[in-house]
Amino acid sequence: MISTSGIRGIVGAGLDPAVAVQYAAAFGTYLRKGRVIIGRDTRPSGQMLKMAVIAGLRGVGIGVIDVGIVPTPTVQLAVTGLSAAGGVCLTASHNPAEWNALKFFNRKGEFIDKSDLRKIGWILQSRKFGFKDFRSLGGLQTDNSWLEKHVNDILKLKVINRRAVKSARLKVVVDAVNGAGSIALPLLLERLGLEIVRLNCDNDGNFVHKPEPVAANLKMLSAAVKKFRADIGMACDPDADRLALVDENGRPLGEELTLALAVRFILSKRRGNVVVNLSTSRVTQDVASQMGARTYYTSVGEANVIAGLKKHKAIIGGEGNGGVIYPVSHYGRDALVGAAAMAALVAESKKSLSELAGTLPIYYNIKLKAPLPRGFEKKIARLEKAAKESFDHLKIDRRDGLRFDFSRGWFQVRKSNTEPIYRLIIESDSDKLSNVIKGEITKILK
Image 1 (cartoon, rainbow, N blue to C red):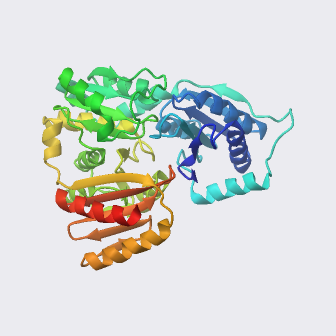
Image 2: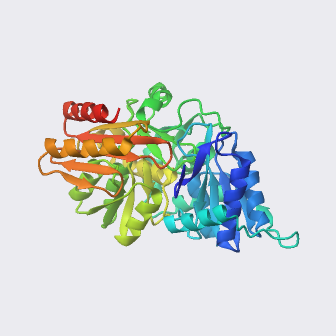
Image 3: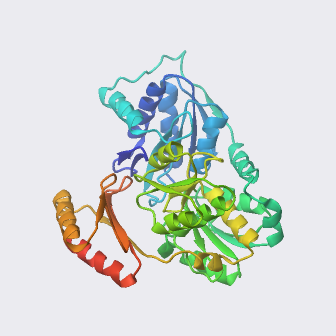
């Protein structure tokens, strides 16, 4: 799977050290000079692939600074903090442990764009690597200070009222699925003055449950919240750029509400625009509208949302998978920023998380994924025809797969950027309607 979201595959079945070396050498050749920051999550294949990437970069004369096992946003911050030419994070995000990926960042600590990816791909295909002789190889340094710096940067954000958070005496259960957030997320919350219960925070890559932080995978967290009578449950994915919440009753809120609540919190402090992707629930747009803000939509992918944030000079945005982007911190999804915002929101409002969630508009959201069927494009054409016949005043957005908006909701079908599957999202004001739409679409796409 090759996209601006990373060079992603199953280790030993497509993604191997030879592939990693070549992509790293192509990336370094494209950069020409400077240093590259490298970090990784806790997957068993991470150390092996890191060594391959380091070899590829050093071989073309690029110096490497290894920042260790850290969240993806930590790598992004280190790129800008050290004025590096770029960065690489070895992580397959929410994918299972057999997957891994090379995520490439530019000198701004942001995902490379499609133009960058094409140029890197040309170097790879043409084999025009800029390998150096023994006198001009890149160096290697280690810098383990960036996790601490990341946490400290968030603690300095003006929108986070540390005194209010500490006074609230909140108890939080953290499930980091033994990924790169295992140390960072509890550390941040402890520094904010919260009582922390650690769950799956061993930092050892043992994904004890499916790593994507969706409701179905948060049963351990829900049970722990009730057992320890906690105020909030927080779960992140293996590279800690997505955050999901469980309320004080042990009920998963769904990752969509993380962004909606973060938008509400930031807009309560500042006025400005909001940018989200086309797979994001309408609840975020509704929250923004209630607070006098305008919402703009982009294609799925962090790079696309960031481009939208800059274009529309937005103050908050992200993706409906729990990925909060707060530009004052940095242009990247960050579970730690989301966690600090949620703690501050609960503390300042003096309401429980369930009460805060209860004030949000209610939609019935279904998210499915399935292997790409044969004749997918023809089936999509059939789906479009059926939708036009079924809904009045239908609006169709073709920027990312097909999104259909109608008076009572919307649905979207798109190929995944990270897995060989298609994703289907349906949202409406009725549980029955959402399920009826699901049934009709899956008949066409089966």
